[in-house]
Amino acid sequence: MAQVFTIKYPSVHPGTESTEIKFFEGEPDLISLFPAADSVDGISGPRRLFVTDTVIADLPAVQPFVNEFKDGRRGGDLLLILGAGEKYKTVDSVLKIVQTALENNFNRSDIFTGIGGGVITDMTAFASSMFKRGAKVEFVSTTLLGMVDAAVGGKTGCDFESYKNMIGAFYPAQTLYIFPQFVQTLTSDEYRSGFAEAIKTAFLYSPQMYELIKAEKQKILQRDKNVLNKIITECVKAKASVVEQDFTEKNIRMELNLGHTFGHALESCAGLGKVTHGDAVAWGMARAVCLSESLGLCPPEYKTEILEILRFFGWETESVHSALKGMDSPALMLLAAMRKDKKNSSGKVRFVLQKGIARNIITEVDDAEILKIL
Image 1 (cartoon, rainbow, N blue to C red):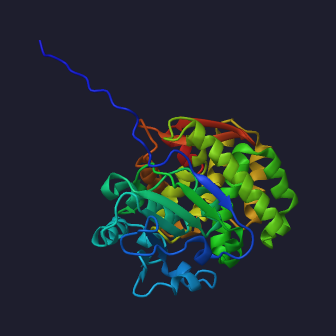
Image 2: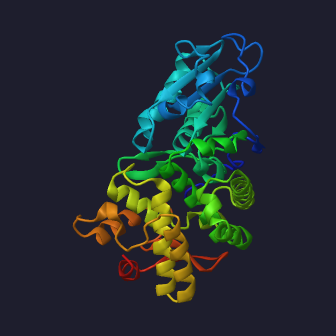
Image 3: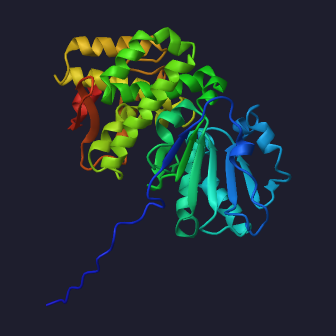
């Protein structure tokens, strides 16, 4: 008979005990926020490796900070500027961050600081989680999508081949700096993409925010600062509450994937970067509410109302997204991509569906039911 021994381990530490979220009014001032480390040895405190992309580096609010770096250096700090967009969310980009830190003798007490949207913050935190088994990480979120969702809660990673976020870790930032003013600099596509995650949060958790969105639709389109500040704050609070209850997505945090199973499949099938993440999620939420109604979970009136508000903000809601038109068997392509979703645990595809606002259900669905609404 074999002898059996057991080793018991504590839970793996995610790099920080908590995330401090700081909201700032007015124009971002990164020079004041991040004074330079005095020397290569970091005598005055930890050194920082700032990571951003070519688009963010050119923003008027960021340029003065970038200009302080000569050949990527400012005292003991470094600045790494990566390519912008989903196509750069790769293992190679993550390893470039790690390589830069290694070549410049960073250590685990130094800080990786991601300045950008979800692509930059996801990759910066993933690199930090791997560097010498875990350095410190913090974010300056510059997009609405990052402020309301991507930068909050510790999911990190990168795409692999044609699959979204297939490699990653749970590794939250120790500090998140939010300047809502950055939202005014976004393109219309970026703004709409970010707002998709905000309205998702309202659908899931906040009837009050949903009513605010319905009442202030025009102000939202005009990027009214007061309305957006309320929405950003409520989204952060809602996601923080979910993450505190279920950090590693074993139960309630799965609800945050409303629209994402369909949406990630769309992004993969269209080609990563062809459809913005938020636009894909919004289309996914349209498919999810249609699936909910088809399965008898929600009344037809709820489906109609959700589709109408999604269309108002400019999102596609038809069964075949325009990015897939002309392709052979798009429904079967999407189903095949959904089967590879990392959240599945059996032969069926798992979805977050709804009975109504803030009435959520996580369930697995047969292929035939999925194909009906595609």
